[in-house]
Amino acid sequence: MTVDIFIFNENHEFILIKRKNDPFKDSWALPGGFVDYGESTEDAAIREAKEETSIDVELERLFNVYSEPDRDPRRHTVSIVYLAHGNFDDARADDDAKDIGVYSFNDLKEMKLAFDHDKILNEIRDYLEENNFF
Image (cartoon, rainbow, N blue to C red; front, side, top):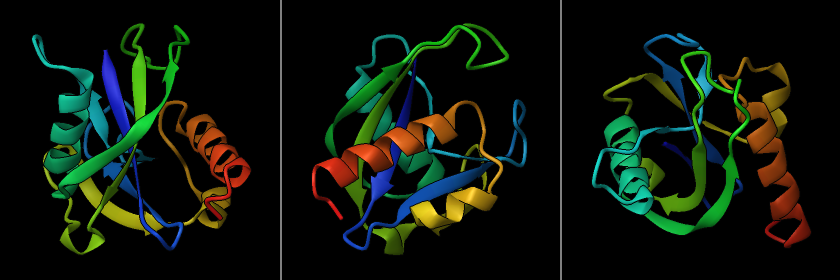
C-alpha cells in the first residue's frame, strides 16, 4: 500500500519531486511512498510529504485509489492519492527526492513522469476544472 500527495496552492501550481532511486530514477513524480505497518494512510501521506518535500501539509481530501497490477514494476502496488495544501516556501528536496519543483498543468507536456502519475495528474486536472478550482 502506498500514498501519493498532490500538494497545490492558490495559483494552481503543484509540487513534483525528482526520484533519487529506482524504479524511475531521475523521473518526476508526485511525492509519496509506502504506508508503514500500523500507520493510517492519512498519517502516511502527511509523513511522506514532509519527508520528501519538507512541507507540512493539510490534507484536503481523498482523491482516488489506483490499483492497476502493472503500475509499479517492483510488484502489485495500490496507491491512495490525496489532495493537500502546504506552504511552498518550505519546499526542499529530502529523503528519496533528488530535486523538487513547482509546476503547472501546462508544464506536464514536456515532462517524463514516473509510474502512472501522468494519468493521476490528468484526472486531478479534470476534477479541479469540473469543480471550478480554476
